[in-house]
Image 1 (cartoon, rainbow, N blue to C red):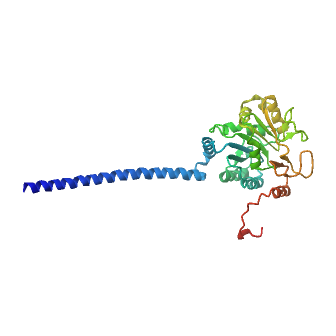
Image 2 (image 1 turned 60 degrees about the vertical axis):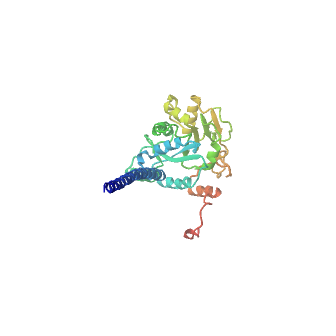
Length: 325
């Protein structure tokens, strides 16, 4: 009888032990699953946020993207900011240029950002429409200045960039200033600049038009010129540009670099940059496959002829929706 009682007690103890062990195992498994689920959710949030920047805070989206690119500089081996200087009221021009630049693909390893640059808004209409543009495209820089062409707007643009982009360490390798009547072929621009110096570089179309000499007091035409980021930082702190703001902006810019002994690495992009061929003049020539930029596209007809020559719509996929184009 005693033996049976002891056996029964051992059986109950065994069952209790395995029950407790089973419950303990369930608790451990639940904890692990919770950890994995939380990790998976966090991972999913990160991945989703990276592929959907519109879900992040718009006020910090530019700085965040610049910081991300710096942490992955091995993939973006050249970074160029193109500032197209224009006017607040040029809404249709900006929409057209978004098509022109938005359908271009820079080569692998290149990051090219095109931004539209103008001074303070002065009309209610501008504030509403430009705000909508910023919300939709995030490609506008508004400077603290009164709108002008040759009285300091270019200085304000370059000198403001280091502070605007202060969260990023050297956010761009180069900054280009361009007019809103120029067509820049982004892939050719990148391939032209890629082998050049990353420091103290001054790149563009040398003036006078007939000259191929980059120094001797000459300067780059205002159609579009590019400098390395160290020159942008120098413009911000130097008294030389600050005290010389008035006059033809491209000529004045060249004087800054001359007086400050900057831009020792100069590249004359002539004749891959030029004015529209018609009418012929010393600054123009016929279209060519190595073209980086075409200037003086003052009307729609000139834009159409330029875009047709470079066959920019050749990647248009066939569709019954627009089969008669």
